Length: 91
Image 1 (spheres, rainbow, N blue to C red):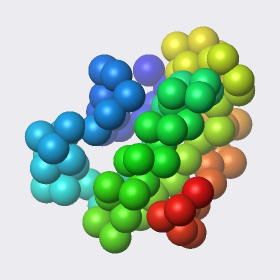
Image 2 (image 1 turned 180 degrees about the horizontal axis):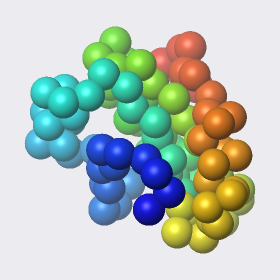
Image 3 (image 1 turned 90 degrees about the horizontal axis):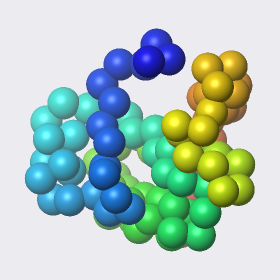
């Protein structure tokens, strides 16, 4: 909706092996934008650990209590432009 292509929705807080396999076949970069709550932060850490070395990994820091559906297009664009590169698998 906001001009990004190849978006994958996890439909939860975990990356399944099937989703990871599809991503490995079609992507080289992942931008993780999970919910801005404790469950989303923990899932982000788990996905980074699981995918480390397979992709260039980035995260979007969503505001506390927000998910992507809560953001306006302008808010999303600012977050996306300021995505953070994951330099370590241990956040």
